[in-house]
Image 1 (cartoon, rainbow, N blue to C red):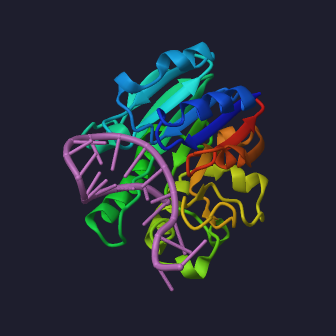
Image 2: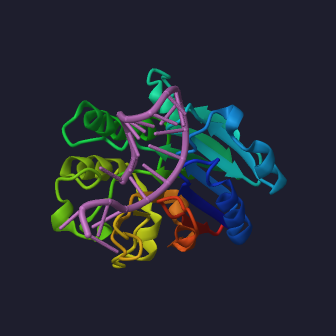
Length: 260
DNA sequence: ATGACTGGAGTTTCCAGA
């Protein structure tokens, strides 16, 4: 069995005790983290190693930051896109090979306000992901996972109020079109494959307005896998428990189980 | 009740998050 997880922890330093508690609780084989908000210097390599996890981290000062934790040493680590031109992407995309699976941890830009330059950067980032997978992998043959905070809720079922949120950031038609094109490369959304009609299944809830308690959330965090890897998918879930702990991340972990 | 969130930078207030 291979247990794969992704979690936007909203600061690895502020959430280190939660992360350690959760690793002991669920014992995933591979964990993709986003928003570590740490430089390599500040990243808790030693504390994670003490729990049996090796880590590859790509971070920066104050914002962004992605990592891959694994019970085996991550191999062939890639940071950012292969052309290396986009500096910000070096805090938003990291890949490594673990047990024959090419695992990507991604933090897709939030996009700020709809129509801004930053919004266009978000769309471009998603289109570049599509191009990257197209150029490097075959979905029918390669074992590929794209895990992370996509900052896009793909379908109306993935948001608490589709009418209210239509046209807003993370649920705008242009973002959904872009994310759909990325999926059409040959990815399977593991959670939706296992729970095709489950409403109210969110991974992010605003800290304000009692959103978690009222389950007003969005499904923004995903584990997508190539069709080849999806053939081995056994289960998928959203782990809401750590979102209920004291001083939580605003995101919940997502998990997928494979017969591998 | 006219407010009600969080983290980080870096300073006492702002920005970004989604």
